[in-house]
Length: 388
Image (cartoon, rainbow, N blue to C red; front, side):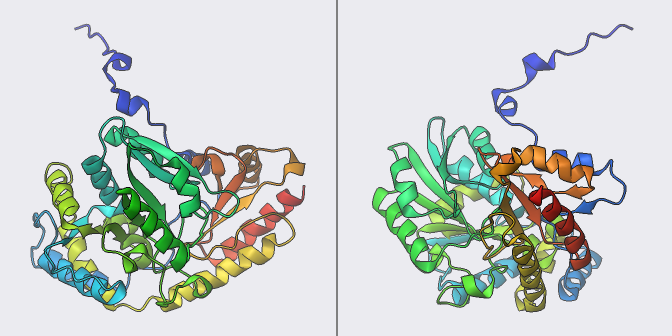
C-alpha cells in the first residue's frame, strides 16, 4: 500500500514555528559526541537528594499514594509551604486574599501564570539576559515578550523597567538570583520594582528558584534572599525544590500570591498538568526541615574559585547567588561567544554561549555545579583560551 507523507510544514502551528530549540540542548548534543567531556554546562546540582526527602517519597510509594492529588497540591505539602512562607516572607496564606498551589516545576508555574494573564498583543517585561524559557512564554501564551537590557551589571532595576511599560503591559518578571548571571537584587531594588508595578497597575512575578542559593554577601536584612514578597503580598512568588535539594527530575515547584490569580492558574492546571507528581509532593513536604547550609557553603567556595581564576583575564560580575558565572569574551579575541564555545568544545570543555540567554552573543555561561576537580580542569582550559 502506498502512503502519502503528511505535509507537516502546513500542519505545524505558528506557535511552534516561533520556538527554536534551546541553545543549551545543542551543547548537550555536541557533548554527547565527546569522550570524557569537562561538563560545565548544566545547571544540575551535583549533591544527592537529602535522605529525609528520599525516605518520605519511598514511604508514599509503598503506601500506594501514587494516584492523582488535588489540583492545588496535597494538604500536607500546602501546610508545609504555608508555614515556610509565614516565617520567611511574613505571608499568612490562610487569608482569603492569598493562595498557594503546587506546580510541575517553576517552569510549570510560569507557564500557567502567563497563560492566565496574557492575550494576543499583551506584553510582559523580562530581563536580558534571561532564563531560556522566558522568551518562549510569549508564543506559548500568545503575548509579546519585551526584553529589558540589564548589561553590564545584570540588575533589572525599576529605572530600566519603567520606560518599557505601555498600556499593554500585564506583568514584569524578575529572576533573582539570576540565571545565567547569578546577580542578586538588593532589598531596596526589589521594593522599587514593587512600587513601580503597583503604581502602574501591573503584576510583579518573582522567580526565586535559586532563593536558598544566595551567598552571604548578597543576603538582605532578613538574612535571606531579597524578595519583593517581603514588601508586598500583591506579587506572584514562584519557588521550587529541584535546585535547592538536588531533585530537578521531580519537577516540583509552587506559586503563591493573590488568590484571584492562583484560582485562574489552578483552573488551567486542571486541564494541562492535572497535578504535580504525587510521590514527589510527599518528599517535598519533608524538605523545609533539611539544613542545606553545607552544600551552599561548598558552592560559595566554588564560586570563589571561578572569580579568582578569571580575575584580570575577563570581565565577570561576581555571582551573588545561583551556581553560574557569566563571563565576557574579550573583544581583542575577535570572537563571538558562540565561536569561543566551539573552541572550548574542541578542548572537551562544555559551556553555553550567551546567545542562548540573550539577544547578545558576547558572554559565556559556565556552571560550577560540579566537582571541584572538574571545575579546576575546565577553568584551566577556559583561562588559556581567554588569554589567547
